[in-house]
Length: 69
Image (tube, rainbow, N blue to C red):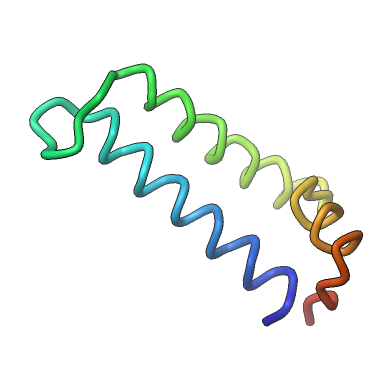
């Protein structure tokens, strides 16, 4: 897997998990504060699309994951 595949997998997982934990009525509901994680991941995705800089990709490269594309 390339670093961009892992970044997308992580972002999608964080969004789905935080929605499950933050939306009232969900079987996993814990607190509406989890929606802040959803907003953070969404903002980070927007920021990385505009600036082409992604903090998670830097961490993955340091861990030895090969680059994307």
